[in-house]
Each structure stands twice: as C-alpha cells, then as structure tokens.
Length: 179
Image 1: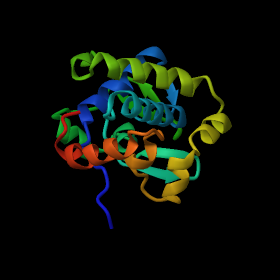
Image 2 (image 1 turned 60 degrees about the vertical axis):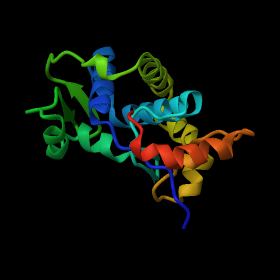
Image 3 (image 1 turned 180 degrees about the vertical axis):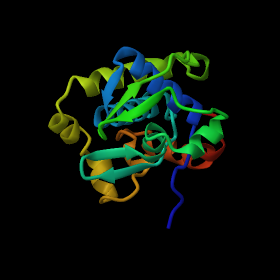
Image 4 (image 1 turned 90 degrees about the vertical axis):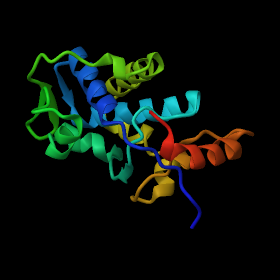
C-alpha cells in the first residue's frame, strides 16, 4: 500500500470555525456545518496547498464527515481535554442541530486570513443549499473513491499537470505541517 497524505488535526481551528459559523447563525443544521467544513478544507487545500483542519474524512451516505469535527460538535470530552477547555460554547439541539449557548469570544488568531475566507465561503455555499443539494454536491470523485470508507486527501486535490508533484510533497510534509 502506498503512503497516503496525512495531517495532524488542528482542534483549535475546528473550534474557532464552528464558533464563527455559530456567530453568523446561532443554530446550525449539523449536516450544513459539517459540509461547510468539507467545502472549506477542500477549497483551501486546492488553492493554498494545505487544508484548514486536517480532519479525517469518512465517506458517509449523505456525504463526507470530518470525524474529529463531528466529535467536537457532539461535545466529546477528549477534544475538551486537548484544547484545555471546561466546556464548548455550543450544544447539540434536537439531534441534528448545534446551537450557541455561550458567549466565549472566537480565538480568530488561530486562523489565517485564507482560513477565515474559505470557512466563510464554505458556510455560504453549504447553507445556500438544501440537504439534498449538499449531499449531491459532496458525492464527487473523492467521495466515490472512498467507497464509504476513509477519504483520501489525494483524491480531494483537483486534476492538474502539477498534481503528482503536489501529492508527493504533501505525503512527505503533511504529517509535520503546522496547520
């Protein structure tokens, strides 16, 4: 098996992204939020040569799910410990939504300008679509190649003459890259 591209997940960035989205809409459909993260990560990877979050994406029936971000949205305590936090400023509401419950300021400094721009674009794109439109928009070749397993960043990179070089670089640099 050839090496795959791996990144170290950036929980502080994921928390900040969720908070940014919740500041724009105090209650968000979980599907919309998770797909916004996928759109942002994939777009940033293709524009700037690195993802924002470095999450592990699972190809699920209704599209890619960034597993660590999903765990954070549900309030998994392992991520609280990783961040050194007592609680998240959100909670699950009704099983399929997350809502803002605190007024903790967003630690925007953990995000670059390009991160914020792509998170905002991903959020706009995701929330402008219906559930079925979001699902269809995320069932591309990268999702299909995973066959309901773990998606590969290699498959998220757009086809171009430089793709092989980009993949080779990210295989080597990805695990040590600071996101």
